[in-house]
Length: 166
Image (cartoon, rainbow, N blue to C red; front, side, top):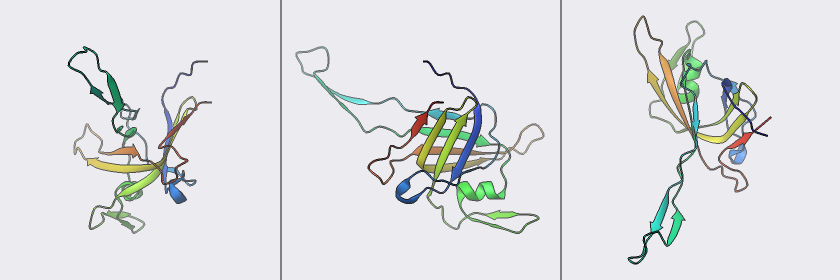
């Protein structure tokens, strides 16, 4: 039976498990700005081999595929959200102060996306690429753009992502 999927219910992030299995303690890191949430599986590319005598390719091989990507923009980021996606430290209680790491760390987290009708996308090992887009304006909110690339887990038995349907 066809499955229609729409809207974001939750986007959760957390520490990945041993051997890059899906993390078990995941939490939302903020509200997602409307229209910024996207999951894409890039088109596969191929190398074609042609002969001088034939119009069509005589053989094809699949090239290395690009990873599946999940993107969103956090519209209400706080110090803990910034620490989750950028690393660094959070000090204090009121106010909480985030300071970036002295050198840019490689951040890998597990990510779970659930749609409004219960479709769940799981990325056990995601490479996080964050970017702050701080529009200082009365008509704009600042945002933290987060890009998650699904990487191959260390376990040969695990896929880079899975999609389950209710």
